[in-house]
Image (tube, rainbow, N blue to C red; front, side, top):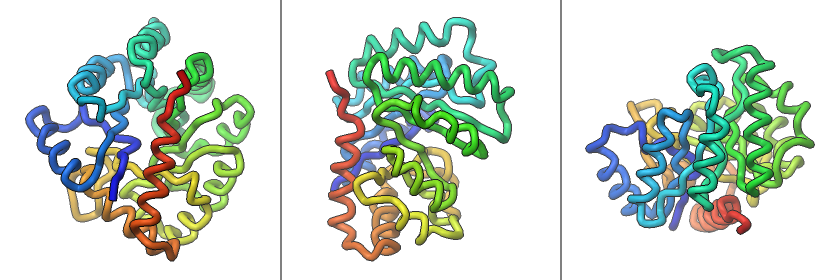
Length: 249
């Protein structure tokens, strides 16, 4: 089986640990990684990891809603510069957060600027959404052709709505703690499911970090909940992942 970790923060692992993370992941069948930046402070690290990744590490650049105040006045110009430097780069992680972020008006403005750049450069958009469903529901028509709600932990009903709107739903290891996990994964068509770790964050309950080598375990869990063969499910999701990251040149 082959996997793509569609959302990971390789820059947040300990420096001497990253090589081991990648080696273990490759041994587990993880062939590619979308390495997501969260502010201008880590974009250079993401860029360097991508350059060193032998084509396996695909960069994504975005201003996370938690770090909007740290973005600086020229964050948008810096983001556009990175997109020009990396023709395969995605836009994100960006989005909306109702728990611990700046006022919603400011979040919406920053998010819309990401949407504009994703459309302008025909790039997939990686969305962080926490306690902000109502806000996103007012923006369906604004979103680019390709978008994903990463590390989805909302309701099955909202997941189904995301799918109807043409978006991907990405599941991470936090799914193991979701009270309605079975109904949730069954609410999304197979062709719109992605897998991720959000590493090193959101680990399994018994661990302190999440690692891409754990994706086979996640795939097995979801396939069982859906009543599908694990190998067939993994192959389908790998295809979805390739389709998602395929940037139209």
